[in-house]
Length: 124
Image (cartoon, rainbow, N blue to C red; front, side):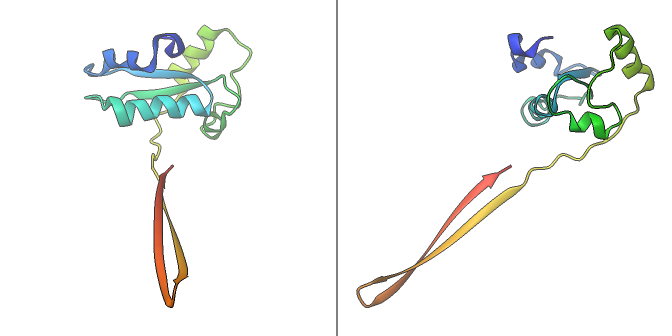
């Protein structure tokens, strides 16, 4: 399924399946995009196993998991078969970081000193 042409929402058709797998062909950004959609938006009945084919410019996850920075110069069928037969299931941590910035301003208004506190929050 080509998510660029069909849209990531096309994964909705798998939401109720008892077992399904996803192979993400791309880089770290594409992997994050698909995982975020599956886990944060789709929230399927059963979560799929997710594999990756490092075809992007940033492939750190693939490298860390032992699959290398790029796919080897082999036939795609052989690569897909290797993923199915040689890969192992690995649990990964997923987290979100919430940063809260606090800025305190002390100003004089006439003879009174006023303190204002402004906060802002960012989720990464």
